[in-house]
Length: 384
Image (cartoon, rainbow, N blue to C red):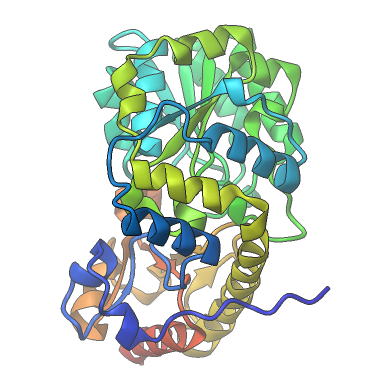
């Protein structure tokens, strides 16, 4: 069945928003940097939040807001994965969940593997949890695959955990079940754990398929933790709700023994919106969003070929974030600076993702085709 792409809001309406994307820069700048999207909310979310506001339901988050059961149903429908709601606990956002899980599972000074180029907060949250960052870069020449041999060497050398991005930000890589199972075997062999950030999981584009790390194998279930949220797919970051997931008794015990305050940080509106997002009535909206993003990820390839032919870009298998190599233009290690100053387009600074991001930018294509075209034409004008 053909799905009609979701339509982004007009830019004049978007500029009425007061979130980071629309207030970080002056009005003459096209914002394609932070991971917010330009689409209307799913109707079920709007209805649920409106009803809450109308009755003044703005108090504390209840102990059982229904988010665990809603996520379990979503995982069953969208991933074919059965997770027991008893293995789901909420917190404020994904970074909070990652920090608290690491804090509970590593000792001060333990090394934690990351796989750059990777989401910039990874570099900060590991020290916050008491760990030390150990870099094992993705294999760029192999389609940004995990360097399993490098990860094994790091764990054999004493690293105690792997902080996984699954799907990967910024490259849009969707790790295969076989790769994830192999990673679990390596971790188990060295007595390490894997903590998987799965915030972009609802946004995997066909024919790629998402494999939750905890479902990759029995070993993955035993060594793994995951953190998920509706925030990226449904544009709910400001409402503060994420889910810490486990699939084994020992790991569940670790998460259940986290301080009560960790769960208390869950936003009430975040939980309400998350329940509506993960409900079956929001599936049609999500499919329409995926259709729009699929069209845009391909449009971006065409626009770059036309206006910035020196750019190198691999169409991502997940999400709405494009990892674009502009090193061939000779614009220095951080091309985003010139693009902002001269083209008035805000894209994310490649070097913040690690040394592997020198000469790169990350472009958010979760917008209208017209905004995307305008942005790339502006960038292209600088290269002529």
